[in-house]
Image (cartoon, rainbow, N blue to C red):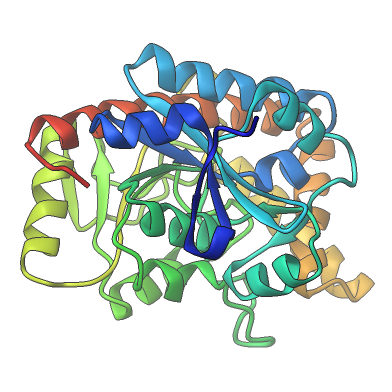
Length: 314
């Protein structure tokens, strides 16, 4: 017997643990599945997904990994479903635009920041942890390439915990776009927006916060006023795994030049750049990526607990 709870016309299915946590008003952290689909090689993608969920649990939260399986949006995956989702080639990358396409064809998909934040809001989850948000690609003045994550963040009321924008993006232009879309950017125990693999970028955040309660206070003030959109919380990668910002900038800029020469753009660009960076750093970038994902899950759970502790019921 299937004891999962179904939502809007049976398009969204809640895992029993997530449904129970929502009913009991427990702290829940939404997690994306694009990481499982394309972020890391198999079987490490499965292991890291499990470790992120465990970090959320250890910090007092309930993990809710979001993915599309056979045309149904799943909020929370069983161990078997998570393992199936991690199988190479099983999940395609799904942004918010792609959700109806994947559902109509009853296919499988790994949700991006844009898609995950939308689903989280639909079911009443306010906290979402990811690695890095999408943004404006380097060289956007030559070829306009802006992630769907940015407008999506202006339309979903979710606290997004990340290690900054994905490293291959233009941090300054990404922050300008977030300002344009009315999305406040907080630095968690830092005054700078993290640069994914690096703890520092030189770009200031809108507000430096030290505690989960301060994050919640900003989000509550925004939403109490009826101001739509997310609050982005930049959490620096743990010091032990952090890479030097200047070194990474040189490597990434070189990879961007190579991509232009090879005619790589659009959805193929980010995987190309990440592979080039991994090769150039001899795997250190992957180690940093894994560490920041786990750390973000932990911090997100702490914020989720503070959200519930503030008396919020959604």
